[in-house]
Length: 482
Image 1 (cartoon, helix red, strand yellow):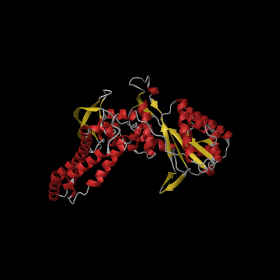
Image 2 (cartoon, rainbow, N blue to C red):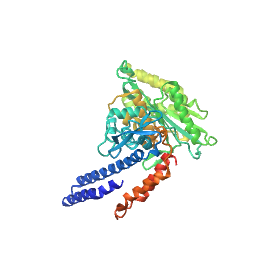
Image 3 (cartoon, rainbow, N blue to C red):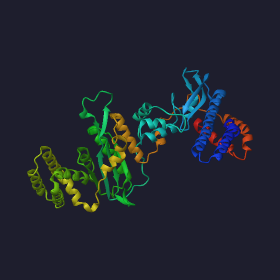
Image 4 (tube, rainbow, N blue to C red):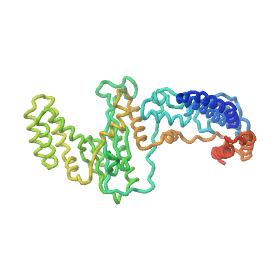
């Protein structure tokens, strides 16, 4: 670190002073000034990181008692992408005298997997951009300077992501009613598992599921906000997938809410089998058909009636709120009597069938209007899934669509991308023979750093060495298990 700071003090400050002189001649060149400052600061930061990693490797190289049973093979130049840019440093290859294994012990020390191309912070930047825009933009956002990766690399990383389960709550919340809205998106597929494996265009749609649990709504300015909302989603294919999906939801409810206070769970959706099935998996849950889809079917059955359509729609709603199921059949018979086109007749018949087949779920909403049952699933599908996955022309694989859906859910639940990256990595064991690093070795390294940084400590602009040295010592103590 001392060398980097000395160089910055000697050369970096001069570069900044020169940039300031140029900027003072033309204060409108704000962008050029900021870009110049950024370049100098980034160069300084990369130098600091490289020097720190080199110092770790030098200790491994020079101190044999730190690495018993390991012999030096050679020292190689290396590069690693970070969110700041590419760091160029050196690392020593060692060979175990007993097992013959070869490895870079510095990788173990830094917690870097063999052949890794980037650090955790760079991966987190990639995911943060990818979840909102595209693989390509995610790859180009890996760092603020010269490091980026291909969209293929981004796609490969997305496909192997594992997502953590929801953290346990400290204290169970108390509410008598919970609401669950559920729906699905329609995502276009280019292929299922490999290119060319979709036999016809009718099977090129993938429908990731989404559901969210909340305690009700409250006004937030001119809009309404869901209270304590928690999202769930992904592909969850087949009957087993559906059961797993609802199990995750009900496990969360069991963990987060007091069962002695909770009385009702209303599940709202369009009546799809997988949604209705969820209501049968919990004793307190019941399914309510959401008004959005009900309204859509009513409009579809009456849009061709011209001037009388509003009157007929009013009659249908009057029959629904009056709980007059028999009146529904009479109204639709009248509509069919004045409908000639076959396509229109099909729409009318489908609408009638939809309403009658979901009559119980519709009446449940009518009977419990005082419980404030609403459903905004269509809007959430658009906001959480479609904005990234289906609103623009794009094609997915089945795996990619499932993983992106899960990443979007993680993101909208407030998930931290750096924590997600770290969740992927199993704890790396230290190389055999490197379990101990004596306090004497650490103190010797600290004292050497103190001597090297003595001049810098006197500079009024930089009061840094001792806190930073203590941090380094603490990190080393943690890594080496002291």
